[in-house]
Amino acid sequence: MKMCGIAGYTGKRKAGELLLKSIRNLEYRGYDSVGMCTLSGQGIEVRKGKGKVSEAAPELEFSSLPGTTGIAHTRWGTHGVPSEKNAHPHLSPSGKIAIAHNGIIENYLQLKEELRGADFRSDTDSEVIAHLLEKNYSGSLRDAMLKTMKMLNGTYAVCAICADSGKIVVARNGSPLAIGLGVGENFIGSDVSAFVEHTKKVVYLEDFEIAVLGEDSVEVFDREGRQVSPEVKKIDWSVECAQKQGYKHFMLKEIHEQPRVVRESVSAPFDFEMETRPERIFVVACGTAAYAGLTGKYILEKQAGIPVEVAPASEFRYSNPVIGEKDLFVAISQSGETADTLAALRLAKQKGAKTLGIINVRESTIAREVDSVVYTAAGPEIGVASTKAFLSQLVALYRLSSKLSGKELPLSSLPGKIEQVLLRSKSIRETAKKYFRVYNFLYMGRNFNFPVAMEGALKLKEISYIHAEGYASGEMKHGPLALVCDEVPTVAISPRDSVYPKMVSNIQEILARNGKVLAVATEGDREISGQATDVFEVPETEEELYPFLTVVPLQLFAYHVADLRDCDVDKPRNLAKSVTVE
Image (cartoon, rainbow, N blue to C red; front, side, top):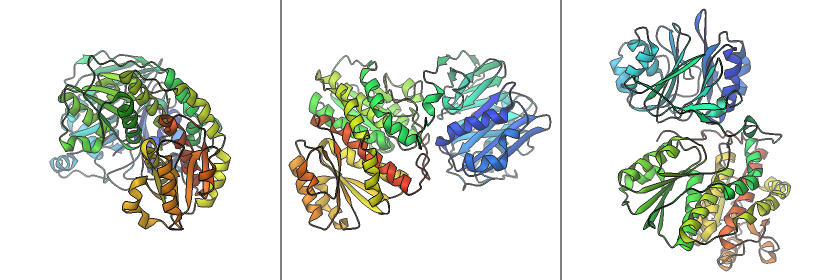
């Protein structure tokens, strides 16, 4: 199990109806299968099946489940194909205990051997937890969970109920788990979107903590069973932030939120200080956040004059990085839970580096473990393909550069210019109609717009399933030009900046090989418009600020292509919003 959505409820209201809403709100975290179970006078009743919530819920009739205590799950799996038997919740052999799990149990095969003779009904690693809980159960689900936790290697957020009790027991290690505190009721969620419409008071479990929830009580314990006093936080956004508000998809809504996001990110507190200037900066992230980090490298080296290394978080630990006390380690993560980034952070801390997190989710694991944290102002990002988080991460990196260099850039001018790009969405859709049946794209850019080329290609491939690759423009002649033909268009990011003449030459190389060119260009650029097959215009700005503008038409182009192909834009196949295992 990789990235999934867990929900739980105990109170006086009908659990099935509440949990159905919760897993709908969590579905961006996983959507290959879904399930729910509740406690009733008859014991534990389970319903589950293959597919998304919208596909499975009508047939499974979750809302009709009896009882006022229950757990639910929406899955994005790594162990076992999507099917009813592999969907959660999983039952113990007697059917008295049910669990939902997010994470990966690395020693599940060894544990299965130790449980030799047990009847396993699924292909998942998660089912072993239900078996262990029953084996360790002697009247207290809390005690059984404490024993079971010590047997598990890997990552987990586990939510369990038992037919002998009306309470929910949860445990966490490496996978996020939040508890919503109500009046006469309490909630569980992989994140707060599961229950934000019911309560704004939340407790975030720490690693190796467990909690016992009743309708009027929440008790938290450490791994040795000692009770601890958790800190209660307040959620600072409303349920409306996580709704589509008239847009066809969350992704389109989030693209159009970017002027506000940049405006708020520019004015948000920036609490970061270093006693001494860092000798080097390491920027570590995954996916879109890594491309934001690569853009940050350009501005940090240009303005602050500090060497910057950018590494994929999944590779950082294995390169035996030479990092120490005089260096700054910057971890970028929308969720603040990305497992590879978290592991890289912990290594950097072991080596003595100063650490900074650029994080969107408050009180997430990375945010709590870094020395300093800068929260981006993106708000909840529901679409799996990241858009507004990218721009908010850029703002944070540019503000870091200004902090270290004392040089300011006119970031406050950006929201109005982004709005001008968004006004061209309809014309971008018309262009998308020409290309949505194409199967391969090349993207190219130079300098500040090289990372934008990779980000644009990533957006297209992850939501439309079209093969796309981003390259530094000067590298095209070192191999990718072999792919250029009438059937493989090239997106050239070519605003009027210091490398503009080079980009014009690269475009000529494409045209000389009968390639089609879609150019992102500064508005009014007749030279580019006279050469390119199609042009997406952006307002003129400072060279360093073009990535904030050039990425937006690429986001819109990817969105419209995917929509025209009838793809599930917000929940692309095989992907999940946040990856909490390595």
